[in-house]
Length: 212
Image (cartoon, rainbow, N blue to C red):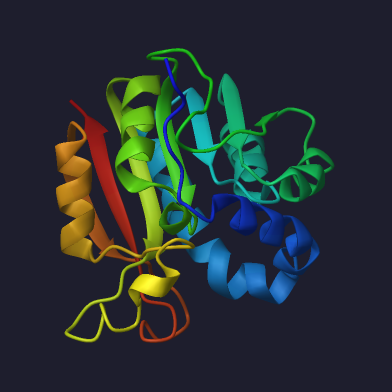
């Protein structure tokens, strides 16, 4: 069976994040940009009781390590396509299972996790193949939680010209609902991430669903 396709410039994106791994760890960037969505997802994971969790596009492993440390589930997988990011992640926790794989082909068994989470990485994935992979590895009823910048309004498309979509594409909230539903999930929540910055600066939205 051939591996699912990835975005056309995926290798360039992966190499770029390997080079930016150290910058990504800056405390102020983490506190302002990444900690609020991580807090929201960890709270939802705690309520769900998930014991086998995959953080896809885990970067330098901050959220995956937090999940392991704060929730103590049976197993946490930190998955990222960037070797540079995972090199940083591996030094953060020896209890997380770090996996150097693309989101579209994670290599985990069918029905092997209770939750798949992803923060500010989904725009780099090939959306439909990645969601199909998440559906495959999740147990029935399993939790899906994705955070990314979701531009809205008539200028949303203009901010993402066709020329850059080989690198990344940020679906609107409505597009996220359509994509996730088409992949075999039921949407249970969708709302802006609560943070100390104005939404216009970081217009990220959490979309939560359950596998049918």
